[in-house]
Length: 78
Image (cartoon, rainbow, N blue to C red):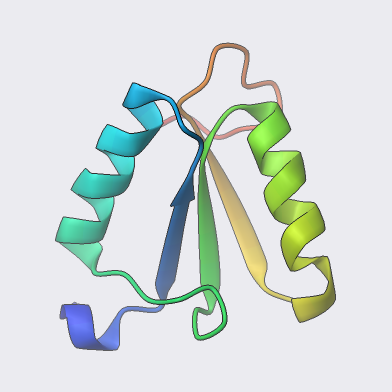
C-alpha cells in the first residue's frame, strides 16, 4: 500500500513505546489525517483508547486499539 493511498490514521499516546510504534506503522503503511481515514489506530493504553473513541465518536470511524501501554485490557496485542 502506498503512502498516498493510506486508509489509516495512526494516533499515539505520549509514551516512548507508543511513539516508536506510530513511527514504525506510519512508515510501513502510510499515514492520513483522522478526518480522511477509514480506520483510526490508537496506540497506547486503555485510557488513550477511550479518549480516541470519545474524540471520534461523532465521525463513525472504525477505531482499532493496539496495546503500547501498561495494562491493555481493552487493547489488541501489538
